Length: 109
Image 1 (tube, one colour):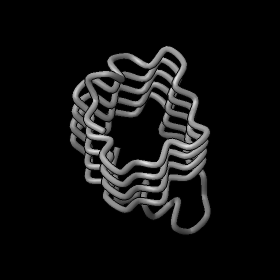
Image 2 (image 1 turned 45 degrees about the horizontal axis):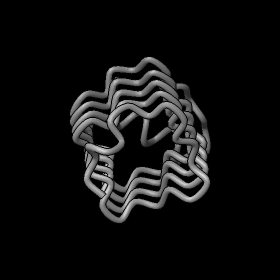
Image 3 (image 1 turned 135 degrees about the vertical axis):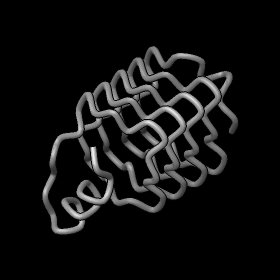
Image 4 (image 1 turned 180 degrees about the vertical axis):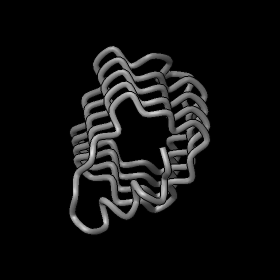
């Protein structure tokens, strides 16, 4: 999936689905992805620093080694997401659903 198209769609107010998307290593720094449908998305090694993921659906997403430094995950649904080696330094997790998250204890906070 082209990350520039994804960024543009959200910028103009569209909410395209990125469910099951291959976003491995994607540069989504500072992206406004609030309420995004990222169900089962592959975000391994993605750069999501300071991204707005408020209320995003990240159920089952693979966020292994993703950089979520300073990201806003308030109210996001991370049920069954894989956070192995993810960097959550300074991330906002207020009200996030962390039910069944894989390797949360291995994530950097």
